[in-house]
Structure formats: structure tokens, C-alpha cells
Length: 147
Image 1 (spheres, one colour):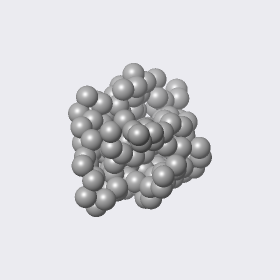
Image 2: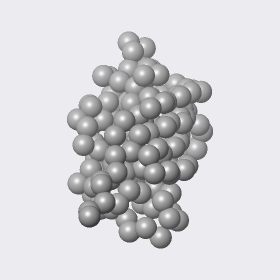
Image 3: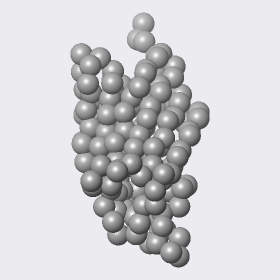
Image 4: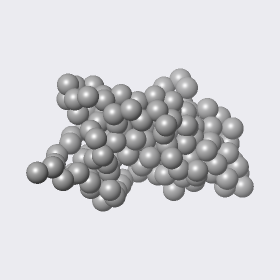
């Protein structure tokens, strides 16, 4: 099993101020197996995340889910290796996320290669009902080996 990177400083907003502004926070992360990183968090949509009817917009779901996948992937990378860019993102919203209601976020690594990582993430209601989900492909920055 790979040594887990200490990402405690990124708990909370994940290093992105927008996360706390839209009501999301990362609460845990880890690595299952060799490189199957995961992240976990909560989301209580704020007024900034919602339209005038109190429903979080699909683009906001994408921000939350993209961040969850990035956090999961970064938790599985060692040293100074990290995600560099989101190459592809597909987001599906099945049910509305409502202003002030609590949700659970989970991001997971599906597969990791030398240059690319594949992830998935979900937003679920507290009772486990699927609200939204996403898959993504991420370009990795790998530190050059020391010679």
C-alpha cells in the first residue's frame, strides 16, 4: 500500500475559497489499496449556490464534484505529485440540492496511470438518496525523478 499523503491542511475548503462560499467542506480522505484515494465531505448549499427558487445550479454541483475527485486523487499521489488539470467532466443531476439542506459528498479514484487519473464522485442526501454524480479524467503532474 502506498504511503498516504498528509492533506490535513486542505480539510475544510480544499484550498479553494469558493467551496466554503457555496457551503461545501471536506472532512476526511484516505487511500484504499495501492492508489485508490477517496475524499468525503458535506454540502449545505448557500444562497450563492442557488437560483432564486432555492435550488443549487448544475454548474455548482460540478464544482463540488470536481473538487471531490481532485481531493481523492491528490490523496493517493505521493510527494509533490498532484492533479494538474481536469481534462473531462460529466455531471448528472438526478434530484435538486436545496438551499440549507445537508448532503454528503464522496470522491473516489477509479484508476490511476502515469499521466492520467480517472475519478468519480457523488452527492447524496443524508438518507442515501443519489442527488448528483460525476465522472472525470484528470491530467497528473508527476515530479521528475532525481538523477
